[in-house]
Length: 340
Image (cartoon, rainbow, N blue to C red; front, side, top):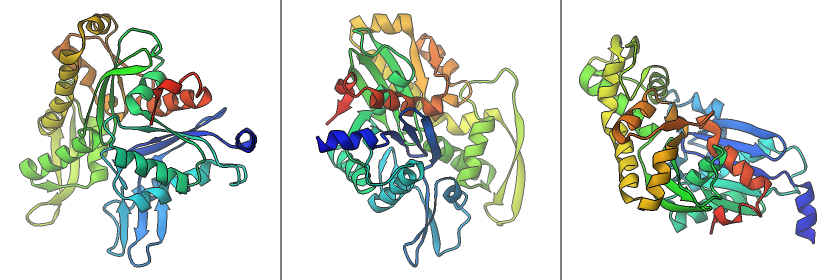
C-alpha cells in the first residue's frame, strides 16, 4: 500500500543511457533531457566539475588536473562510480518534486548486455535515487518508439545504430526472434575519420571535430552532389596547425570498415531469419533508428545490398527513449518486453 501511495507522487521516468548521449522521458511531459554522456572530474580531488553539455566542451581541451570522462563504453557501464554520479545529476535535474518520492525508471540497454553489466546499470540507478527499475532491450524500445506493431505475430526488422553499439533485431509478438549486437557504431565512425586523416593526410584532429565532420559531410553512399570542405588540425610531424581540403569520397574511404561491419550485420540477420518471418520483412522492409541512421546515404547502401525498403524513423536520436516512455506509461501492457 505504501509503495502504491508513493507511486502516485513519484515522477516516473524512462532513460536511454547511451554511450554518446543520455535522454530522459518524463510521463505526461515527454523528453525533458538530452545531453552528452560525459563527466568532467578534478583528478586531484575527485570532485565532479561538470556533467553533460558543459562537460563535453572539456573533451580534448582540459589541463592535466581535469579529465573529461565518457563513463559508458560500447553501450554499457565502463566506470561505475562516474556513471552513478552522472545518472544522479541527470535525475536531480529533471525531478521537480521532493526527492522523498523516488521515481520508477525504465532504462534501454543493449541486447548483448551481460548479467554483470545489467547489475551495474540497476545498482547505479538505485544509488542515484530510482525506486523500481525496468530494463528493456534498445531494439525493442526503438521498434515501439517507431510505432511498429510489436504485439502482432508478424516480423519487424529494426537496426538501431547508437554511439557504442549497433543492434540488429527481428521482433514479433512482443519478443525478439533474432538479435545481434555489434560494438561498431557512431564512435567507431569518429575513430575511423581520426585514423584516416592521421594516416593519409598526416593531420591530427580531436574527437569533437571528427564528430562534426561526420555529421556535416560524411556519407555511406555517393552523394548526388559531391561535397568539398576544409578541415583544420595539427600536422603530425611538426605539430604546426594545418588546414587541408577533403571530399565526401575521402571520408567514405576512411569509414569503409565500420560501415560495412554494420551492413554485414544486417545481412547476417536476414540469413538467419526463419522463412515465415522473411516474407514479412520482404514486404515491410526494415527500420533504421539511432544517431547512426542520420549518416547520409546509409539507407541507400543497405537498400542496394539487401533489396529491402529502408525506413528512417522521424527522429532517430529520440526513438529509443520514446519507446521506453511508451512502456513506462503502460507497464502492464508492455510487461513482456522487460528483461530480468
